[in-house]
Amino acid sequence: MDKFVINGGKPLSGTVMIGGAKNASLALMPATILANGIYHLHNTPDLRDILTMGRLLETMGVGVSLVDQTLTIDTKTMNSYEAPYEHVKQMRASIYVLGPLVARFGQAKVSLPGGCAWGPRPVNLHIEGIRKLGAEIELDAGYIIAKAKRLSGTRILFDVSSVGATGNVMMAAVLAKGTTLIENAAQEPEMVQLSEFLVKMGAKIHGIGTGRLEIEGVDELHPADVTTISDRIEAGTFLIAGAMAGKKGGMIRLEKCNQHHMGALIVKLEDIGAKIRTGADWIELTPPEKIYAVNATTAIYPGFPTDMQAQWIALMSLAQGTSIVKDTVYFDRFTHVPELIRLGANITLKENVATVIGVKKLTGAKVMSTDLRASASLILAGLVAEGTTEVLRVYHIDRGYESVEKKLQALGADILREKGEEF
Ligand code: UD1
Image (cartoon, rainbow, N blue to C red):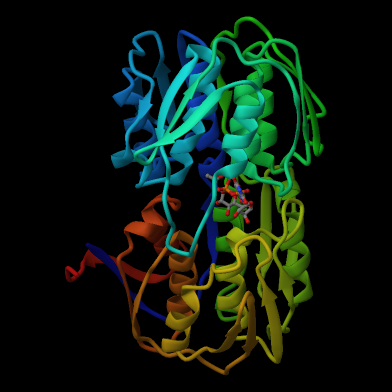
């Protein structure tokens, strides 16, 4: 397993190109199941999760190839409606195939995802929503078995606003007979893009970008092409890297990004003392003289993203004063905390609330990455820690950050990918 070896304390400055949004691609790819033909998904990032979704589609007979950030998907040869455990266990987003399979083929066999590195992550809302659309669903030997002649429109209220359940139910409802109302739908930019893609394929969706989606089912959809939006979490992670590197470095400029998707983070970065300038598809950050301690509470979009919580804690570790970081979306998502403490951070965790007392410096150590965003926070900390930090098990980072070490090297970081020890 690869590891990153980081010699911390190097000044960072320069320009980073931001890639396509992983979480948008992971929703767009299964949507192609809904119509027969060939699709081109431009600006698709070359990431392990995209490969996993591609392999899953291939097991169903779909043709998938990624060349120069364009993902070509051919659904004409599709011949299976099953998502096996071997694939789903690698990536929970595999469950996205459930809605499209039932809607188009009237049948699906999709493995239940099981647990996750940071605790239980239920899929009850996906199942209840698709059941309410008229599918017969039973759970058998770890699989969701769904059958339906044709789904029919209904009213659905999500008790919790869920990105995945919104995407899954929306993809099922577009081919249902009649109109479906989804109340408390997720409004994340990735869901807006999925809705717009479905509309391009011939779906009728009203209320896009709001919490109330009205979907008039149609008999048939057709293939379409799309350019994936930029990854707001990758962009945010690089902004935090710049903020943490401090005045020694200089300005960090992100290109091919969308500031409108990053409002909450931009406000918080200004609150810590960073200067931010934005343009149509770029953001520049000038790091603060000193990092002010700023609280953050995660919330659904447009609130502060849970996917930035770990990186924010890394930043707050070096702030002047004490900050409170609370995760209200995933209560257990704090596996980075003990590892950051190994690097010298002063963090106390009580349930879903981390109290971070800023320290003067972090010191290099061996740390273990446990999930995608936790890995990002450890790299951020390693970049400023005194001495050498080894971040083990970096395969997690490859799920969601394309060539992260190369992009950081281009900014001046001393970070190398090496073969790590096996566990
Ligand atoms: C997506 C993102 C993930 C991000 C998360 C929250 C993808 C591939 N992943 O995950 O990076 O951290 O949104 O922004 O897009 N819930 C239920 N029942 C369900 C489904 C969800 O109770 O059936 C709860 C979850 O436990 C959580 C909340 O809803 O507390 C939000 O989760 P959700 O939006 O569904 O996350 P994902 O779609 O899995």
